[in-house]
Length: 106
Image (cartoon, rainbow, N blue to C red; front, side, top):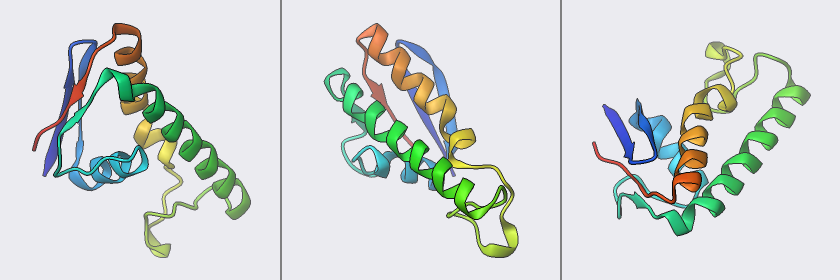
């Protein structure tokens, strides 16, 4: 199932529900609750996501290029969290600049 993140400040971001739930969890949100990141929460969300991306990069460097904690050992691809979260992080940054909220729905 797909999840769409619209905001007045950025183009929509669409991703699979599992990834959306994972990224929302990183920033302290749940996919099934409240369904909004208010502009007052965007700074904290950016900081949490950037920290997670740095941690993921460090772990991948320590374990090798094909490492990714979300994939089973035989399915690791080398596509890390950074690749998967980049559009969402960009949307958060644009929402910050535009003083806008981000919502989501299924």
